[in-house]
Image (cartoon, rainbow, N blue to C red; front, side, top):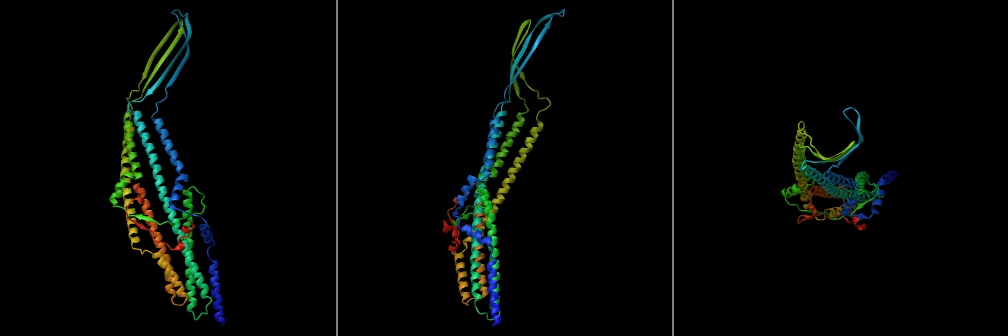
Length: 452
């Protein structure tokens, strides 16, 4: 009898110790999360487009390019020159013949060789186009990143909540088991198995909370918010479009991909630079009308116009022409490499997306809900002694494994879809007649939807 009482006290102490070992930060984080209104993914994207601090950099870059374009189409300022002096003349015998003031004034204006200003303006226009394409590319990448991070945060929050749910059920079960009269070593070993399972579940919940915090920090940074601001993502139903063939997506990327457009613009711009280098073989012409007056006995006035033309004898700008042609070849090579890179990334994302769609198509309609109900049913029957410990622990673990597999598969599909949208430069979420919808999650995991 004393041995049984000792074992009973030992089990109670183990249950209390396990309950005290729960991560306080996890509970605090979950409580704080439940108090925050849920936000839809599209709302997060809109907020990032309005408040992301890096947008100012691209706005300034466009302003710089437009300023350079204005400078490229402006003539050089004319130069004014004024000379002032005194003139003294003598006769043949060395006597003073006259003395007086002399002065002259001229204004010179340089004129570029025909076509040079047009080429510089064309180069500057391409620079503005590059800045605008860079801005559009950043916004597309930002929207895709926000959606991926938002869903990552939602996945982590749901994983943590599910692990806590199963862990709490295990703690309640331990409290029930320690109140029974142990008959042999089997009840003690079963209790130890459940205790070990609870420790593992708390570890999974802690890791999920850590992933949620990491996603939250990055998400707040991209939204221009303080890093510690809490956020809950609404549990909206995801829809995955049935895309066309990979060749159709490649055709879209060939015309709409931001990186390919930028490489094409750079190639065109470099062609203008080659033409400009050839044009600069011929010098600019300076025209300078002048007027001068001298008073030294007699008054002498001069009015005329001067023309200044450098003679292109030694420097024919061959070095700059060769350098411009080499950079043009580099731009053509960069375009080719970018085309191959985009095709490779697009095919990889397309294959991953189609693979994840095929996986989701084989899921039962209510897979997660049925597994959750089976886990609860197993818990009740184990308490009644109608279920072995191996089946009980297997049910609890498989429920969490299935939930994580579903969430991770959907996360991979969403990330691949976002990557395809960036690569094709098109909103693929609006394309395709058929959609694969996200399986319904258990009601207990839809806390964010209830708050909304």
